[in-house]
Image (cartoon, rainbow, N blue to C red):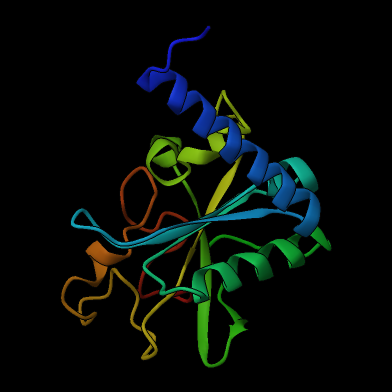
Length: 174
């Protein structure tokens, strides 16, 4: 008989979560994991199996309320799987009405915090990832001087520097 320990319970929970992720990916083309906000920061949502199923980077969006995060991620995976290419620092106005989004490459140092469950599918963390960044409805980006107080902390930029790295803020792009 196997003793029930915290480790065996955690192993079983991980196994069940991995099975759910794979079933979602097989049924829908990807899984979306949603993490609610807490005392440490904003809620976020991320994809798992977009890379395994379609060869497109996994994606994360931070700070959007549910169900907007999941809807945005599913739309991204559907479009990317159909062959659409998304360039870092380019504005895309057709995900939400009147609110553009842009993309940035996620630094690997952020993978454990923002893609934790993805390691059940990719144990070595060997997958590309993008962050979809969304401004306020007034088109203020987290790094804008006039952005609402706390917005930069609510939607951190997951690059090495914590700043946009694929464009110059205030320039031609966001």
